[in-house]
Image (cartoon, rainbow, N blue to C red; front, side, top):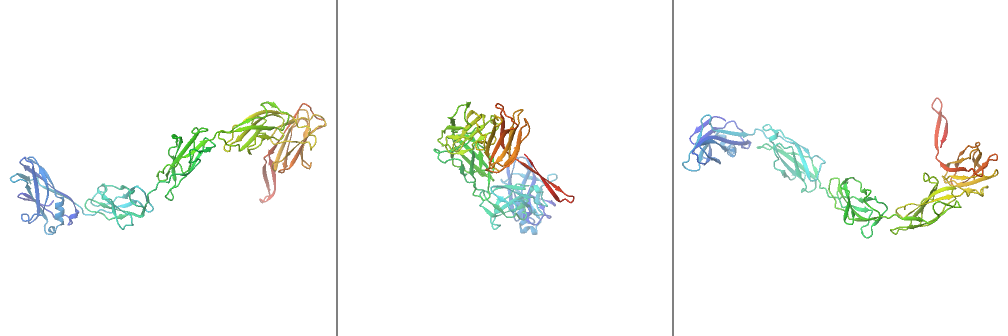
Length: 576
């Protein structure tokens, strides 16, 4: 402060070095020491400009209650000083005086004005307005839905630290034509502000602007780029549920206890995708499975093992979340029922029966608890306890209840019959049968016994003149292998002919050695196999055995080159 002047009933200050604008005044207060009569008093201060201290009162400050015989009183002069600096009186008057009065006449209020109890007036003021902030969010291309964190880099103020600055934030939804406050002033030192835009209409022309405030002055506005306010719409309730029926009295039959439940996701907002789903499965009205929220864009859920039971009736629903987290309504209920497996009973032959023919006719009965007709059937046979399948009818369509096999190899066989109800295959009904060696007579091509792939045949060369013929039709073009096992001490050879009895291949190894020949065939062509004893070899008790199989060939090509790298030849090797 400048020179302190004393006056009866008051105090006067000379003010010469402050800014000329009253708006620069941030705060002002007067502090005095006093002596009283011990009674609570209300002290008023009137102030005027010098030199007209006694002739004109310029204004007053808020009253202060004091109590006790002595102490310190502080008077808020902020508005008084602002008004005085803003008036035209300031131009020629650089001093201000204060007069103390009390509420009741005769009451005593004395102030001390001698060191160290001199009255003090403290004034805070600005020399500079604060600088501008820089907005870091939102930026161009930002899409805002609800809560959004507006961020900025703090302004710089030459008078105040950044921790003292507050910020006025405004929003325009029409490209800056009009503005409204998001917040009049933030907390001091803020560099972000979260605002809920939910009530703001969608727009592609939104702008944020921010200005700093130091308690006296505002800085300049700074604007963000235009951004979009777009409110997320909840997804539609899932549709296209499958499997299932919308009618509880006609549930869709399911051919498994672990079906895949599928639906269609849709959202009113273009570009939104499914982010999560939740599936509910009920038995009647009882919830038996809640998948919980599953993070996946897949519109499918596979029911875990152990959830559904055979012959059980169920219904299911699903709801989804979009990739922004909005939750759809739950879908309509869809009704399903788990299929009962059909059953098959074999009515022909008995287990372990020795049959008299290599051609078998199987018969069976079919039943289904759900009333579904037989749609397919299949018979398979094995000679090695199902390590391999030697006979396979394939899955045949229709409701037939019997099937006749082609001629089968002799020996012990295991057979199984299954049937399908349109959804699932039954458990297998089985038979174990012993087939005879009923290939004779087969001494000529006309009597050749038909054989099949992947079966193990056994027979006898019973006399020195006995010849056994077999025939088959190649199922596809390619390479096939015929393997003959010969009894110990005997010498049998094998020959392969086409339908015109042209020799295709032969196996003519010595006594006791197995024959194995590989040859090419054409699809649909008939081939004959001839097995003979060599040099009078035969046995009425020791059987030979053979099998016919398709052969997968691997071709390896090796090229030959000259010194210049040119191909001069190639060799192809076939490996079986």
